[in-house]
Length: 166
Image (cartoon, rainbow, N blue to C red; front, side, top):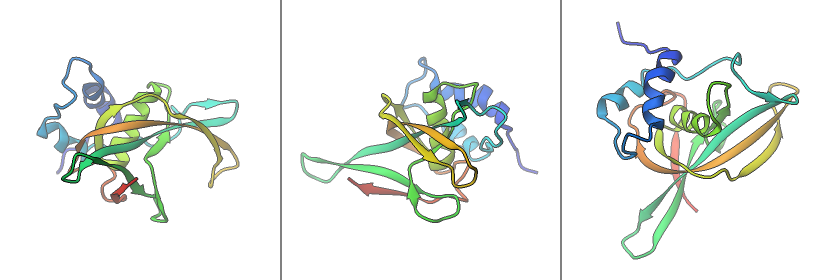
């Protein structure tokens, strides 16, 4: 019988490690990385934030600089497959009441894309209509400089990831 970590345990023990200023941002122990694949992604809407009827959504644009053998470094962004497999997108999801925007954006990026890095300043806000419900979403995106690409992550069996040149 395998070990299964609840979302509450993940929030209490694993995610705070990722946000701690006391821990080197380059430090991501292999044991913790292996545990990430056992963490179930958050589900449900009981902690979901809404503002004037709009669901609050946050996400990241994961990026890295690829050394192409010259002095110039090529910028790449990471995209992931949509849940139903139709198209590619940036990782994003609900901003919940027990986390900051930046924490939620990083959590969604870890869950959906399996990368960890430094969340940078907010890029802006956009609105879009939900495909499933008759409500609007208000979204915020953050650039994320990728420091580590995980071999195992919560949605690795339902999402594909691909680095693309900009």
